[in-house]
Image (cartoon, rainbow, N blue to C red; front, side, top):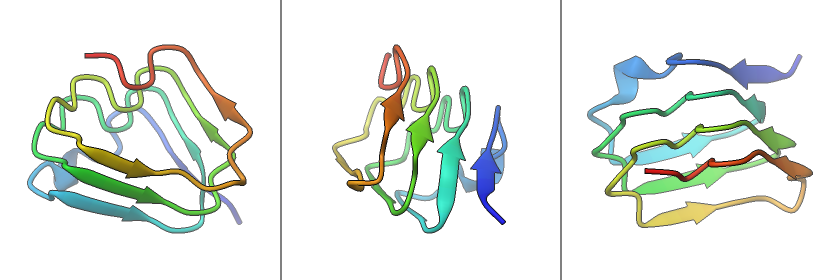
Length: 79
C-alpha cells in the first residue's frame, strides 16, 4: 500500500511547522498549498511530487528529499 497525498488533503496540518512524511509515494497537486507556517519538510521514500505541491508555502526554509525521488513537476515550490 502506497500512500498518496492529493489536493488540499493536508488542511488539518496548517499549524504544524515541521512535517515528516514517511512512506508517502506521491505528493499530489496542491497538497500543501497555502500552508504558510511550514518551515521544514522531511520526505522519505517519495517517488514523485506534483505541480504546486508546496505552492505559497512562503516560510518553507528546508526540505529533505530522498534519493528515491524520480519526478518533480513544474512549479512545485512556486509562490
